[in-house]
Image 1 (cartoon, rainbow, N blue to C red):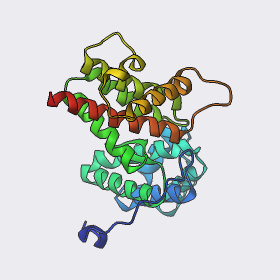
Image 2 (spheres, rainbow, N blue to C red):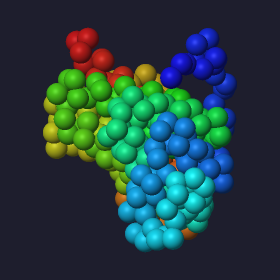
Image 3 (cartoon, rainbow, N blue to C red):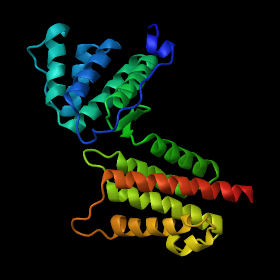
Length: 264
């Protein structure tokens, strides 16, 4: 398949502001079916995948691919709970990749473009739907995870992985879990850098030699995470954006500490 004009010349719009998280708007429900069909997934294969995900019996009266089975697929996707729509997207990727890995890659790339263009706070990575935040969030968390793993800080890397997984849970993100795990990752890094394996992050802040007033900022972040992630009070449930901020800052500070340690 020849590349499109926008890909040949590198044109892409500014990502739309994220306005959709716990929803699957009509345009997405229509879009994933159209995209899978365009990339060669037959209506019968699509129906098999959708029915398996939704645990619905295929209509035995529908035999012809177009329009009967194709319309059935669209109707099933249209009526599915919002979080199942993302399960279906993963299923379509799987079916396309089994037939032709390149078709799976094209499905993932085009779907991610669609998410960005339509302000949908999800992304597909290696066939799995994960939470998508701001560009700063994406870059900082990715850099932190890679550096933790490459420097042998596997516990910290696992904690950061769990934080990102918590934000990607469906139908509801585990906000408090994301806060807890991201700060645990930062705590692991701080303990390793200072060789203080038993102290908490709150006890280590003053020894990290952070530029002032960033040290005070980290103390406040630790306090916020302790209150919102560990000692919740009624009516004080953190938002997704709060967790995204904590993960972003924890990632950035972790990278700062690890790079500083490597320079010594």
